[in-house]
Amino acid sequence: MKTAPVPHEARIATGDSGVHYDTPPVVFERLLDANMNYSSGYYLTGEEDLDQAQRAKMDKIAAMCGFQPGARVLDLGCGWSGPATYFADVHGCRVTGYTLSRTQRDFAMERAEARGCAERLDIRVQNVLDAELEVEHYDHVVFLESIIHMKEKAELFDRCNQALKPSGTLFVQESCYDKNSKDAAYQTERGRDAVDLAFGGTTTMVSAGEMQRLMEEAGLSPVYSENITNHYTRTLSQWLDNLDEHAEEMEAADPAFFPMLRKYLMLALATYRMAQTQCFLIAAQKAPLTWIRRHAGPRA
Ligand SMILES: C[S@@+](CC[C@H](N)C(=O)[O-])C[C@H]1O[C@@H](n2cnc3c(N)ncnc32)[C@H](O)[C@@H]1O
Picture: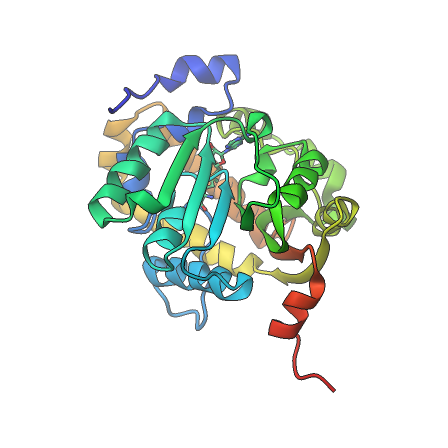
């Protein structure tokens, strides 16, 4: 059964971190690719449109992690479940996703029904910090631009390590600081506080090095890291093109949210262009040999 979206203006005032994601889906349907991915795409040639870049990103994750039909994938912070639904539909995985937003869950499950993959998709509305994750149950755990909202990264990686099977993979796509130059400056960026409040808290960003250190401390071995900042600036530009094209409709759907969304996306684009924020793909393994045999070149 569908649940009505919660009015977000009142929630912004109280600092409710889920507010951004309870926005009527039509706003994001006009902004994002057809699959509703709210994270960077991956541009193999630079000529791709948003749909192609998002598919390339999801297929890259699937190939790097070695997704197999029937594999159990845990998607923590799954958004409108664009990636989760694609992994269930196209790669045949059994995906459990967590989001703070009932609006997102309703949207995802309705779409999965239409695509005929709902029995492989289980979307739960719960804070991942409160979720009971079954021990050694999952083949893969992914955080796709969601762990930025969660300050308890050490605890989460520890729990992911326990939830993964012995050959399991943790995959993180996330915005990170340029630690060397911007740590303090980033936190005090003018105008950042209001935007941060409305977008679910982004001030718990860490550097890419810190992210990997936290993985290691949880007992996971980082095996791969790629800086995809240029991919994100292209994605953000394409989102802003969509926003300009559909401005009237998006603003009518949510007049209070629209200007804030525009400000947020422009601020984000500026920080990526200046490399104050950089986007990374980072993978870690419980047993690094599994990865190395698959990806790290011929053996001597
Ligand atoms: C930027 S969206 C990422 C969307 C998705 N991963 C994608 O690539 O399309 C962040 C998501 O993280 C979720 N989230 C943030 N904090 C969370 C928490 N503590 N527990 C569960 N979900 C959370 C939000 O509800 C939202 O769905």
